[in-house]
Length: 182
Image (cartoon, rainbow, N blue to C red):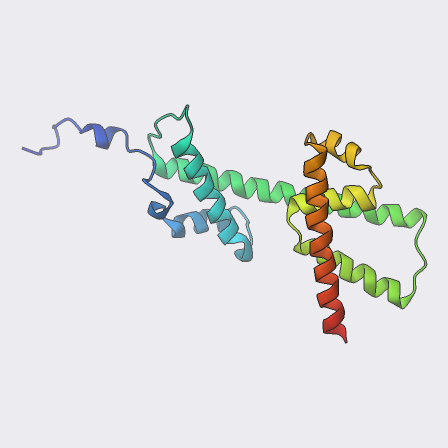
């Protein structure tokens, strides 16, 4: 009969996670990320992370039923926003430590070194967080590949691979930057 006293169906009791990433309400995810303080330019990355979490939830062998998909999406988007803030705090802390290091033994300050330092700093911002991390640890903190691997808890081969990708990206950035200047 369909009255208010009818028992809800099983689907109404426990809606599942959206069938695929295409079923996500992208506007809702973007709004949640914006409310969490994620800048407009990084919203697409945040939406992609929510999609990846959804895929992981769907394919996990020990997955559990998600009873409220909207709440699940809200929680994941909020956690991504918090992670974004933590990453920014780590980056600013690292920047402050590096700047403090130069205070004790600054390099020769010529116009050329200032321009080069600015180009390197801009290039570092273009790297992925993992590339930036290993590059800074290797060349700014003077750690060996094995020290970096031990500190990060990853294999030495992964450190070498990331360093290779990071130095290649920096080389390309600095070459492009040099061509733009001339």
